[in-house]
Amino acid sequence: MNDQPAPGTGCPVAHGEGVTRLYGPEAATDPHGIYARLREEYGSVAPVVLEGDVPAWLVLGYRENRRVLDNPMQFSRDSRIWRDWREGQVEDTSPLMQMVGWRPDCVSQDGEPHRRLRAAVTDNLHAVAGRGIRRHATHFAHKQIDAFAGEGRADLVTDFAEYLPMLVLTRVFGLAEGEGRTLAESSNLVIKGGADALAHNERIMRILGELAARKREEPGSDFTSGLLEHHAGLDEDEIVNHLRLVLITAHTMTSNLLARALQLMLTETSWMSGLVSGQLNLSAVVEEVMWNAPPLAVLPGRFATADLELGGCPVKEGDLLVLGLAAGNADPEIRPDAGISVQGNQSHLAFSAGPHECPGQNIGQAIIETAVDVLLHRLPGLRLAVPPEELTSTASTWESRLDSLPVEFPV
Ligand code: HEM
Image (cartoon, rainbow, N blue to C red; front, side):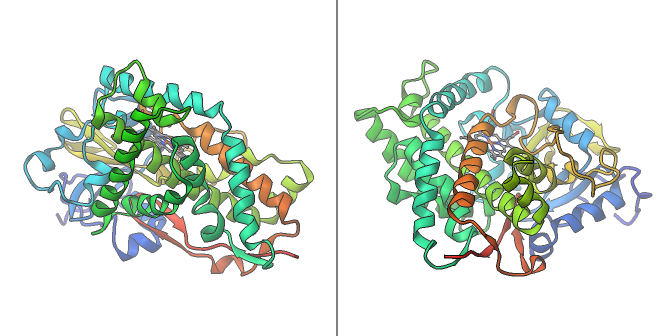
């Protein structure tokens, strides 16, 4: 469509008529540039296309994100009502389906089915949280640091943040530590999308299927056994899909956030000195990152249950909406001066909102706080080994990950 709307006045285009890609080279290097351009052109909601040229609405406004997340009756999480998929425009083998498609897990459902499945997850997360998350994180953080402590330098992405949360999860799930590397690599590739996403998902499902079978025979005091025994009575498929959901979400989100928290501390030295002197605590650092670089930049999937208007856009029943959590956090309507710190304000969108709000946030934060504590304790004098402007990130449609974080320290 050639009719351009006046800046910020909504979008007189139909679903699917946008040509802005939320994937590919520009999205990989400058997702914030794309969000800013779309906001300028369309306002708080914009038409975009996802991998495979699949149309979606990208929600950019903070208030519009909240409206969608808080209203499951209008904006369902159940992708079985997604019109483009129902009409066969999106194949079941599309890499998009790994993030957007329906599964027998709590994140794919609304109402009572959601409550039943979510309770099985949260009851068991609560149980494992009381059984030594910080102890496992301390153990594995030391183990990882031991591998590079004598060198005087390291890459805190590949040598530390990228793998640590998965090592903790192997303990929580009752998996062998050796399976951690495979699972970490496959989880990252599922969320990245692309041709290999499906094969990596299958690899994860196979390992988790074997785990569930093993724990059925020999239960232990782990998350897997807890799910199998939960009174909600999850069937075989539901068990493996919830193990998948928690494993992928917990690992990819926590590793991304840990890397970003370390980046902030090492590039803006006032944060590091505040921490070392005790004037700041780590949760303030994490909160700042939650606002400015939320690990899930774009949340996959809500589906309109009826024709409606959102941010001036004519959303039709069955349309896919993707939620710009990073864009919403930076919305000039709520943050007219983006440079000002948001300390003490927890109303960011990083954990989502409404019925699906992340139930694992305390566990993720406990892993991060422990990891940073151990790191600062073990490596006094830790500093960045390159100028801050040389640090790069690579984004997919959904998240933006720091590529590396080279550091040096006295030995
Ligand atoms: C610390 C970084 C984390 C971030 C930023 C994060 C972010 C999110 C977000 C944005 C959602 C919402 C999905 C939606 O609305 O559709 C979510 C859901 C979820 N998260 Fe997290 N997460 C984190 C850590 C974790 C951890 C450590 C776990 C488990 C140990 C976890 C388990 C889950 C589960 C099970 C759901 C689905 C909840 C539902 O559908 O009711 N997350 N997370």
